[in-house]
Length: 125
Image 1 (cartoon, rainbow, N blue to C red):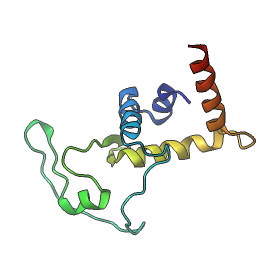
Image 2: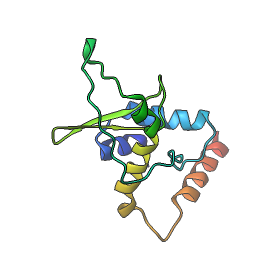
Image 3: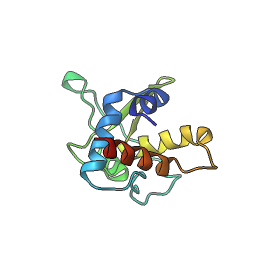
């Protein structure tokens, strides 16, 4: 699937998808989203914070740790029904996979098809 199609399906910028893909390539990690830190699925964290200069919001340390993010990491933000959602790149990938799963064929391997296409392109060059 093209990066632009993934971005459109998620309602996010193409550049964000591109950045995530490039980071995954640089890290030589698998195309499957990396594991998140072990956190109970029902854990709820709450905190008050203040909007700072230039609209900056400080995410409390306990929440950054629960998300597995550090200073300088990229996150994806989405405003939905008046609620601000912050996702890590791996969470965004997982959400994309969930959204697209119903549309993926189960009778063939898209990975094998992609590899075959790339090899054919390389052979033509």
